[in-house]
Image (cartoon, rainbow, N blue to C red; front, top):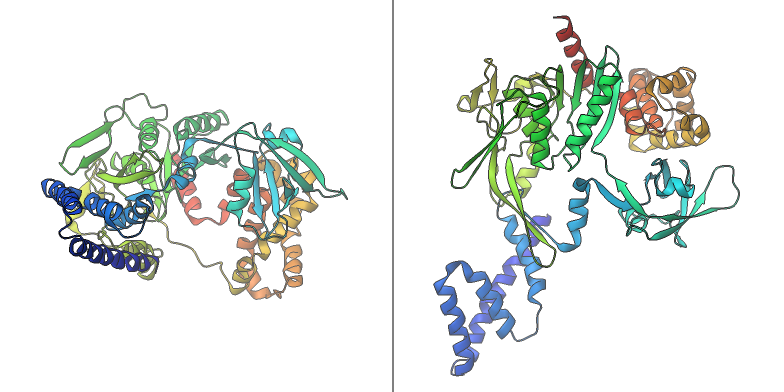
Length: 545
């Protein structure tokens, strides 16, 4: 729909240009000064056929009957040009550059809180230790009522707009009016904004059987450094094997994927290579200094693992290193180069393709200019049953490659895991869909966290979190009563089916309200995650072989 509307704008624009040029040429025929200008422009275009767009814009700027901003036209036309190329070439306006680049830069200027909207109130889930808000006295569980005297509570302000109001230049100040449990009057604090680190290692903790878990959310500028530190910490805690979770990781900086792969591979192992339009090839090899070359490894991927995630998974798979577990990855194997414009905008243009060590193209098929078809590909996988059965996935024999140890792998789009684990819907019932779809389960966990805030703030390990839940065995029953008060009557047959899923989600969302944050979430929900459980079984079996 969006794409069609852009075409509807473009076609009248091009027709208008043609009409205007015709009118101009007729209207000013015989007026030698104007005619000479047009002829000069046309001659310039004839000498350089690639300058047709510039010629057209110059005509509009110098001859069009009304004054019009060429910069405004360019801002509209350039994105349309990009739409006619591959799905990953894109124009980034100057106004969006910060938002696009910030997640990968490793830090931003802000106040240092983790918050959420539920549904129209800013609830502080956690405060970054020793950060600006922590120093100012903001506490987990606080509700932000006003930001700089502007009322935000109950106003249904989009979360992105709340973020804009809270962030600002380092050293600047923002005044917050807070509603705090047990305090009648608003608590007013002034927070001085500062640099806030952005962590790409979302969670890191120990599982039973000396298995470590690490989840990487993106490949940011600090990812390699974060990964090394996290693995060193896990090894100090007794880790003997690692689950490396790349599910949902859409990529980021290529150099970080190469550096991370290098940590797990022996010397002179090909990690990835790229080829441009001239077939010029650039190879990337491991240097032999990797610190975790002998660490037993399982890597988790899914249909949202893309780009750098696929480069890392493909490098390990093609070098017979570790076990790739999950579902087929997204299939983004195009290299973009970000080319800046003087006004602060940029063109992110595809300039090459990625290939795995065995020569597999990661990129799935696409048609230039067909963004809608490209976006529908994942839905087509779902409708063709690919999420639930490996037998539904077919690769052409011409795409078959062989790893050094004789393992068969396929190119043609994404990384197919060594061990396929289907999506599991067996615990999902109508009751579960009701309480999650209406956001009742999540709202309950916020209410529960408020009622147990002091106890939750004292939890700094998964062992302590598990003991807390062991002492609160009535959690699910309490939730069922809460859901009934909020419009979802209990269906005990369906609850019996979904109980493990409900309990795990309650534990996970409450765990996120502790200082553990995401480790509190993933460290409790993994028990109903079939991909995680398969990875644990695989590493345990390898240990006993």
